[in-house]
Amino acid sequence: MSNILEKQKAVIPVRKMRDGTYVEEYSSLMGSPSHKTPMTVTDSPQSLTVTSGKAHLEIFVVGNNDIYFGGSGVSSNNGRPVYSGSGKIWNDVKDDFKVYLVCASGETSEIRIIEYD
Image (cartoon, rainbow, N blue to C red; front, side):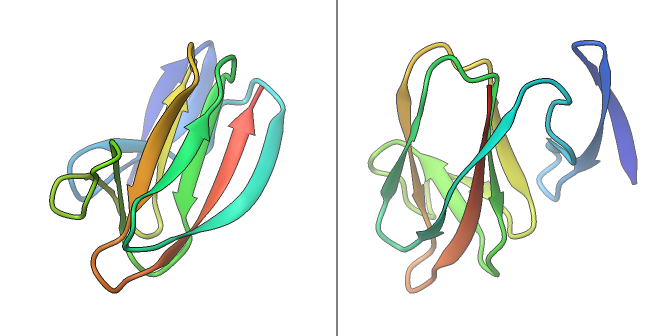
């Protein structure tokens, strides 16, 4: 079941996730997308640098396992989950920052990364 989110005069479908949050099914209709190299997330925290000036940065979990994001000490016990088959979007990035990604112990999962100018 999709809901509609109005954003910057563009209608973007969104999907309700298991944890009650909403994820955009399609990213902003504005801006040029550029794909970054896919990343395999492991059970050791790995950093992803989010660059300032981007309209959006989107990660999408295409692997079979959930991932978790947070600071440098992130784990599956304290990180914010991003479930397999769903994504996370950072909008209007004002400053460079690093986000750390990790899987549960013994697991790996592939993510796809897209930046929008």
